[in-house]
Length: 259
Image 1 (cartoon, rainbow, N blue to C red):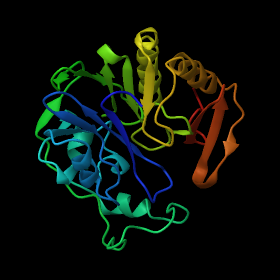
Image 2 (cartoon, one colour; image 1 turned 135 degrees about the horizontal axis):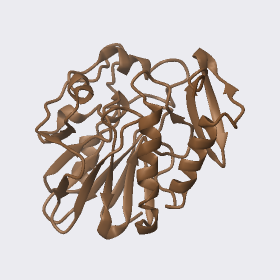
Image 3 (cartoon, rainbow, N blue to C red; image 1 turned 30 degrees about the vertical axis):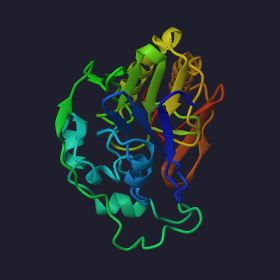
Image 4 (cartoon, rainbow, N blue to C red; image 1 turned 180 degrees about the vertical axis):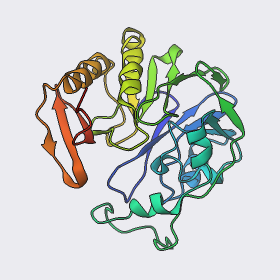
């Protein structure tokens, strides 16, 4: 895809979570660890022998499942991050619900005992912190909205923006209780301002990259939705999909009332 950046898909599960291994000269950074249904550490061991830092784009369970396997895990300095680092069985079990599994699960995987295991945070990060991998520096951008601890990673030298769940090319989930739409709009405007500097945008579900031109469109799309100019498509459990200019969002059906 790009030199020394590897997109690692989570198999078996319909959300198609993607993690990224970003390799420097002295160490590597694993941006998310998937659901832990399969063993991502076995994959990273085949790709690099350098020490690995784990950093999560946010701490929903589909991005932190194998955190526990790594000694060095960075996290954002938020209460949301600290709470999720304690692990969760219910959130993990929800990922195995009807229609969520694709094909056979790995040999030896016990769905009944599946849980998101707790992990230890080695270092807390803040907006604009930089991580030096040796010949490659990544900048942390705090982009709350999807969650309070959502971040993107900026590789300025290579023109790469890793967007986590702030952008990906299928309906972006903005319906959970921890989502804040005002914060989300502010965050995507911040990212759109970077578009002229970027070569690729790398999201974390379904398709691993998009052109930087998607970021200004993302701003326009969410503002169009919030202005009430999009007819919602009702979904189950009180949700609705809103589509604008090829970008879609999954919201609570009444989330825009009073906006």
